[in-house]
Image 1 (spheres, rainbow, N blue to C red):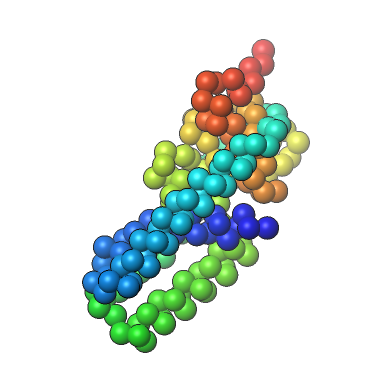
Image 2 (cartoon, helix red, strand yellow; image 1 turned 45 degrees about the vertical axis):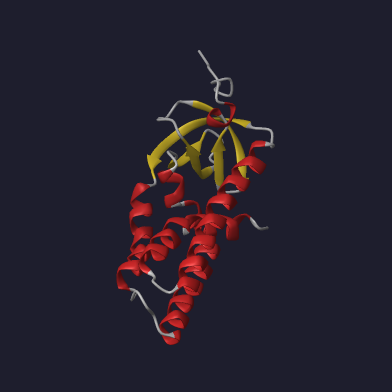
Length: 177
């Protein structure tokens, strides 16, 4: 239930970090630093909680990068470039309104998993279909292609997390013939 909001918050951690650099008013700077830290912590928490689940096997029938979706997502990152260093209360209300609209769209749509923080931390987001016709996003640190087998936990119905990087020793990778 909290997965989507926490994933949204984590996806905007870099944005809040950029806004902290941009804002001169102390209360705004502190607010943005706190939100950036909460975003990083929420992703860490989500990945740790997800690691406790039992992974299931998936043979990948198709694999493609979700980077194009991430590029479109980054358009919202223009906000720090459009902000003023010392905003008026009306400016702050407008920024908050913009972020609320983005949050609603993000949480209610499929873009929540296209998360710039994941890319900054060395993960990749792949759009995959497995041999059981499950279409999902796969969060991984590996290069994968059609025909590969992976053990993955279900973060959500449409998001899988490759257990390989969670095990760290390669033991979560399935090897077949």
